[in-house]
Image (cartoon, rainbow, N blue to C red; front, side, top):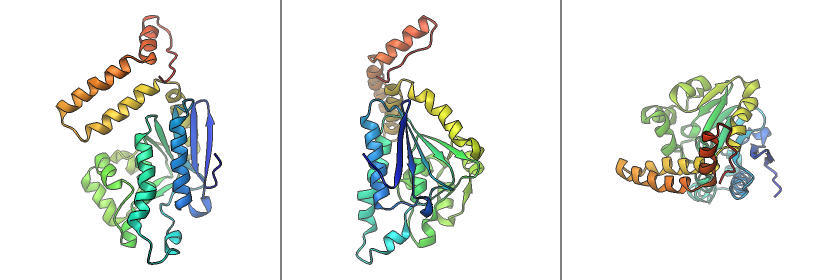
Length: 261
């Protein structure tokens, strides 16, 4: 499938999705939302893809929604419907993808761009990256999943502070707050991401996906229900090729050769 607003490349089991509107700081228009959603769907269906990297081209990860694109639509434009038919589909596609998603945050992530970052599973930021909930600057409410995802990572007080002040949060503070997993020099970002993606793409993909499912489900349940759900998922994992291979490799003192199934 050809794309115009993103780049999509697959190598050694890793799919790299690059937001590619650098002249607009990778701001999302309808086409880029749809193409990014389609790329994640494609990554989910392709068994050869076992890890996904999401990054931006140029000096920004994404500045969020392309406001000029919205302004051109006039008074009849519905932001709610735009979210339901656009960003919501993308966020759901990412959260439901049972393969690891690494966010390589190369620059500013603002507005909806923050929501997209938070929907990744492992977030590695360049030291030049920053994060900003810019919605209040235009009289809007944070969206694209930020109201659910961000307080769970950094706490409600800090999340609300970001929402009402629209302050830019630098990468080092984002790390201190727990928003990202690692901060690395900008020149080393993609090298570091590759060092993470390679092992993930050769690991027990089924187990990774089931762990993601279990943790997402745990937000909705109490401890006893979570324990039962863990047992259910562990039964699935325990019958997999990768579990059998992992056990044999351990006993035989050799590296496991996982197939992701």
